[in-house]
Image (cartoon, rainbow, N blue to C red; front, side):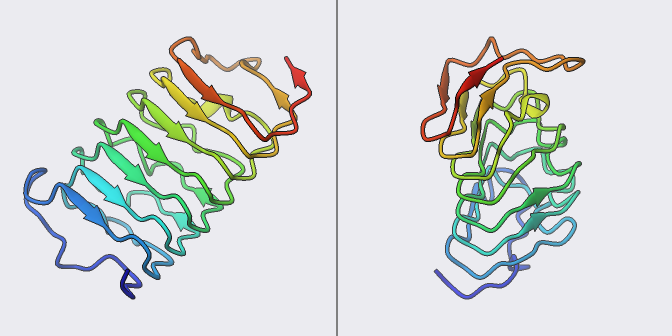
Length: 173
Protein backbone atom coordinates (compact mmCIF):
# COMPACT_ATOMS: atom_id res chain seq x y z
CA UNK A 1 0.00 0.00 0.00
CA UNK A 2 2.57 2.46 -1.20
CA UNK A 3 3.13 4.41 -4.35
CA UNK A 4 5.89 2.33 -5.93
CA UNK A 5 5.79 2.46 -9.71
CA UNK A 6 8.50 -0.19 -10.09
CA UNK A 7 10.28 -2.86 -8.09
CA UNK A 8 12.53 -1.16 -5.49
CA UNK A 9 16.19 -1.79 -6.23
CA UNK A 10 16.89 -2.49 -2.54
CA UNK A 11 15.26 -5.90 -3.01
CA UNK A 12 18.43 -7.73 -3.93
CA UNK A 13 18.83 -10.71 -1.58
CA UNK A 14 21.69 -13.15 -2.13
CA UNK A 15 19.85 -16.45 -1.71
CA UNK A 16 16.35 -17.92 -1.46
CA UNK A 17 16.27 -17.62 2.31
CA UNK A 18 17.47 -14.03 2.76
CA UNK A 19 14.25 -12.63 1.28
CA UNK A 20 11.60 -15.34 1.15
CA UNK A 21 8.69 -13.06 0.22
CA UNK A 22 8.33 -9.89 -1.82
CA UNK A 23 4.93 -8.29 -1.25
CA UNK A 24 4.21 -5.25 -3.39
CA UNK A 25 0.42 -5.39 -3.07
CA UNK A 26 -1.63 -2.30 -3.96
CA UNK A 27 1.04 -0.14 -5.52
CA UNK A 28 1.09 1.61 -8.87
CA UNK A 29 3.43 -0.71 -10.75
CA UNK A 30 2.56 -0.56 -14.45
CA UNK A 31 5.49 -2.39 -16.05
CA UNK A 32 8.48 -4.52 -15.17
CA UNK A 33 11.81 -4.60 -16.94
CA UNK A 34 14.02 -7.54 -17.83
CA UNK A 35 15.51 -9.14 -14.71
CA UNK A 36 13.60 -6.83 -12.33
CA UNK A 37 12.74 -9.95 -10.32
CA UNK A 38 15.98 -11.87 -10.82
CA UNK A 39 17.01 -11.71 -7.14
CA UNK A 40 16.19 -14.98 -5.31
CA UNK A 41 12.94 -15.18 -3.34
CA UNK A 42 10.25 -17.82 -2.78
CA UNK A 43 7.02 -15.85 -3.00
CA UNK A 44 6.05 -12.84 -5.11
CA UNK A 45 2.86 -10.89 -4.48
CA UNK A 46 2.06 -8.17 -7.02
CA UNK A 47 -1.68 -8.18 -6.37
CA UNK A 48 -3.68 -5.02 -7.13
CA UNK A 49 -1.19 -3.14 -9.23
CA UNK A 50 -1.56 -1.83 -12.77
CA UNK A 51 0.58 -4.34 -14.69
CA UNK A 52 -0.52 -4.78 -18.29
CA UNK A 53 2.13 -7.23 -19.49
CA UNK A 54 4.85 -9.42 -18.11
CA UNK A 55 8.09 -9.34 -20.13
CA UNK A 56 10.34 -12.23 -21.08
CA UNK A 57 13.26 -12.90 -18.71
CA UNK A 58 11.82 -10.80 -15.87
CA UNK A 59 12.91 -13.51 -13.41
CA UNK A 60 16.38 -13.98 -14.89
CA UNK A 61 17.89 -17.18 -13.45
CA UNK A 62 15.78 -17.15 -10.28
CA UNK A 63 14.95 -20.79 -9.50
CA UNK A 64 13.68 -20.23 -5.96
CA UNK A 65 10.16 -18.96 -6.73
CA UNK A 66 7.36 -21.23 -5.46
CA UNK A 67 4.32 -18.92 -5.49
CA UNK A 68 3.40 -15.96 -7.69
CA UNK A 69 0.29 -13.80 -7.25
CA UNK A 70 -0.42 -11.43 -10.15
CA UNK A 71 -4.15 -11.20 -9.55
CA UNK A 72 -6.13 -7.96 -9.83
CA UNK A 73 -3.93 -6.31 -12.44
CA UNK A 74 -4.51 -5.25 -16.03
CA UNK A 75 -2.59 -8.11 -17.63
CA UNK A 76 -3.65 -8.74 -21.20
CA UNK A 77 -0.64 -10.81 -22.23
CA UNK A 78 2.27 -12.75 -20.82
CA UNK A 79 5.29 -13.19 -23.04
CA UNK A 80 6.73 -16.54 -23.97
CA UNK A 81 9.88 -17.10 -21.89
CA UNK A 82 8.65 -15.64 -18.58
CA UNK A 83 8.24 -18.85 -16.57
CA UNK A 84 10.50 -21.68 -17.91
CA UNK A 85 13.41 -21.07 -15.51
CA UNK A 86 11.10 -21.23 -12.46
CA UNK A 87 11.75 -24.90 -11.68
CA UNK A 88 10.15 -24.71 -8.22
CA UNK A 89 7.00 -22.77 -9.17
CA UNK A 90 3.99 -24.56 -7.67
CA UNK A 91 1.23 -21.93 -7.59
CA UNK A 92 0.41 -19.18 -10.09
CA UNK A 93 -2.52 -16.80 -9.59
CA UNK A 94 -3.44 -14.81 -12.71
CA UNK A 95 -7.08 -14.25 -11.76
CA UNK A 96 -8.91 -10.95 -12.27
CA UNK A 97 -7.01 -9.79 -15.34
CA UNK A 98 -7.77 -9.49 -19.06
CA UNK A 99 -5.99 -12.59 -20.38
CA UNK A 100 -7.26 -14.45 -23.44
CA UNK A 101 -4.26 -16.77 -23.90
CA UNK A 102 -1.41 -18.26 -21.90
CA UNK A 103 2.19 -18.88 -22.94
CA UNK A 104 2.75 -22.55 -23.78
CA UNK A 105 5.91 -22.72 -21.67
CA UNK A 106 4.48 -22.83 -18.14
CA UNK A 107 6.67 -25.03 -15.92
CA UNK A 108 5.56 -28.70 -15.92
CA UNK A 109 5.77 -28.91 -12.12
CA UNK A 110 3.14 -26.17 -11.64
CA UNK A 111 0.37 -27.60 -9.40
CA UNK A 112 -2.17 -24.77 -8.98
CA UNK A 113 -3.24 -22.36 -11.73
CA UNK A 114 -5.87 -19.70 -11.02
CA UNK A 115 -7.33 -18.06 -14.13
CA UNK A 116 -10.74 -16.94 -12.86
CA UNK A 117 -12.27 -13.68 -14.06
CA UNK A 118 -10.32 -13.25 -17.27
CA UNK A 119 -11.44 -13.22 -20.89
CA UNK A 120 -10.79 -16.82 -21.96
CA UNK A 121 -13.24 -17.93 -24.66
CA UNK A 122 -11.43 -21.23 -25.27
CA UNK A 123 -9.90 -23.70 -22.84
CA UNK A 124 -6.13 -22.99 -22.87
CA UNK A 125 -5.36 -26.70 -23.35
CA UNK A 126 -1.96 -26.32 -25.02
CA UNK A 127 -0.66 -24.29 -22.07
CA UNK A 128 -1.84 -26.54 -19.22
CA UNK A 129 1.21 -28.16 -17.53
CA UNK A 130 1.05 -31.94 -17.20
CA UNK A 131 1.58 -31.82 -13.41
CA UNK A 132 -1.33 -29.48 -12.71
CA UNK A 133 -3.73 -30.69 -9.98
CA UNK A 134 -5.95 -27.61 -9.51
CA UNK A 135 -7.34 -25.38 -12.26
CA UNK A 136 -9.71 -22.44 -11.79
CA UNK A 137 -11.28 -21.13 -15.01
CA UNK A 138 -14.41 -19.74 -13.38
CA UNK A 139 -16.02 -16.52 -14.52
CA UNK A 140 -14.59 -16.45 -18.04
CA UNK A 141 -16.27 -16.61 -21.44
CA UNK A 142 -15.93 -20.34 -22.12
CA UNK A 143 -18.63 -21.69 -24.46
CA UNK A 144 -17.07 -25.10 -25.07
CA UNK A 145 -14.93 -27.26 -22.86
CA UNK A 146 -12.38 -29.09 -24.98
CA UNK A 147 -10.22 -31.35 -22.79
CA UNK A 148 -7.96 -32.13 -25.75
CA UNK A 149 -7.11 -30.70 -29.12
CA UNK A 150 -5.76 -32.29 -32.32
CA UNK A 151 -1.98 -32.36 -32.44
CA UNK A 152 -1.57 -31.24 -28.84
CA UNK A 153 -0.27 -33.69 -26.26
CA UNK A 154 -2.06 -32.87 -23.02
CA UNK A 155 -2.51 -34.81 -19.84
CA UNK A 156 -5.34 -33.48 -17.72
CA UNK A 157 -5.44 -36.74 -15.78
CA UNK A 158 -3.64 -35.22 -12.79
CA UNK A 159 -6.25 -32.51 -12.22
CA UNK A 160 -8.23 -33.28 -9.08
CA UNK A 161 -10.06 -29.94 -8.82
CA UNK A 162 -11.41 -27.82 -11.66
CA UNK A 163 -13.70 -24.81 -11.28
CA UNK A 164 -15.72 -23.85 -14.37
CA UNK A 165 -18.50 -21.93 -12.64
CA UNK A 166 -20.01 -18.81 -14.22
CA UNK A 167 -19.12 -19.58 -17.83
CA UNK A 168 -21.65 -19.79 -20.68
CA UNK A 169 -20.71 -23.45 -21.25
CA UNK A 170 -22.99 -25.39 -23.58
CA UNK A 171 -20.69 -27.95 -25.26
CA UNK A 172 -18.18 -30.57 -24.23
CA UNK A 173 -15.98 -31.90 -27.01
